Amino acid sequence: MRFTGMRTAKATAAALVAVPLALGGMAQHAQARAASPSPSGTFGPGCPAVSQKIDTVKDKVTEAAAAYPQLSQLVSAAVRARLNGTLDSKSHITVFAPSDQAFQKVTASQLTSLLKNQGQLKKVLTYHVVDKQITPDELSHGSFTTVEGSKLTTSGSGTDFKVNGKASIVCGNIKAANATIYVIDAVLQPPSS
Image 1 (tube, helix red, strand yellow):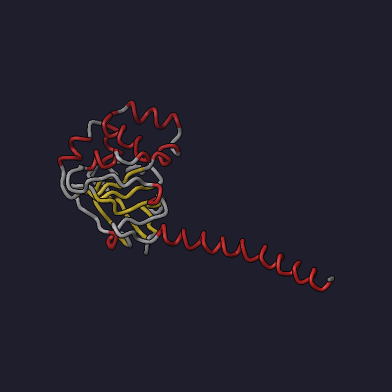
Image 2 (tube, helix red, strand yellow):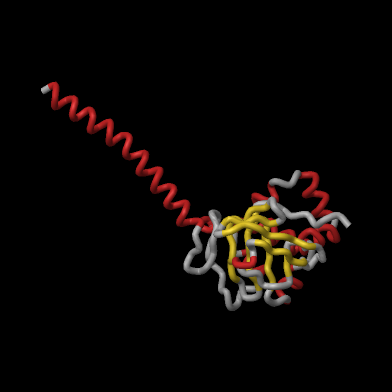
């Protein structure tokens, strides 16, 4: 009886060790799956949380961004800067779109100041826009002139890319009728004049 009890205890202990290991492996597999490109071509760890409600034939960039709850502050800022019509009228653009979490990293006083100054707001927002459709293949060592007029750089590989060396692309290659959107985790600042 004692031998059977020890065997049962060892089997139970082995199961208790195996379950967390298996769950850890499943979690890593799920993370890898989330980061790898989807059938639609989007990639990044933030894509599973992103709503896919865009009509890529009809929805211009502002309407497409509005379909993503994570981009509500960007859409609001674009409307405030009176950029929505300008962005929607352009064709084949790329928007490095700061998420709501990116805006939360900006101090309250900086954000209030930015939102009160329409010229500065427009400058900051147009620094996130490139007048060319950028493919994921171009992100590894990219240097692009923004609509604001300054340079913006991209680097990385696979599904892990940075913009200006500090903002990570959390969900990339989202298609709209006139744009490609890369959601980033920081608000970019144009270089000082």
